[in-house]
Amino acid sequence: MPVPVPPRQSPSKAVPPAPRPGPPAGRHLAYAPQLDGRADPGEIVWTWVEYEDDPSQGKDRPVLVVGRDRSTLLGLMLSSNGDRDGQRNWLALGPGAWDAQKRPSWIRLDRVLTVPEDGIRREGAILDRGRFDGVARALRAGYGWR
Image (cartoon, rainbow, N blue to C red; front, side, top):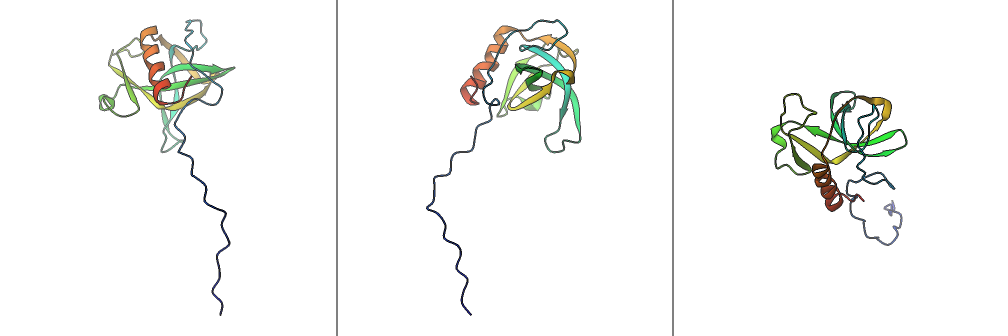
């Protein structure tokens, strides 16, 4: 009985590197906070964030709005978990008005959340320009943001 021959494969092509996390195409960072009832880039707002390992669950948490595409916001989640200190993809922000207990916070740089504007529960605070610029520098340097 003849041995089956696998189909001929095309010449091997270089495998492109895995994409770096970054913003959805064509969107860039902005800083334009205005506590006017509408979430704006530069503001920290509260919204439901799904767990990565189980999207059927999640928790209400603070998110820094870094951009907008019409009524969809681009955001980065914050954590007050001290274990984040020094972890890859997390940047220390320090304490702020978004946390009633004034605990230090860290922001996750490698997970961009898209949040419909009507999914925002409330505005939390404005992140000062210096800290926003620090987040922007980190995103531009390591995550492909513009």
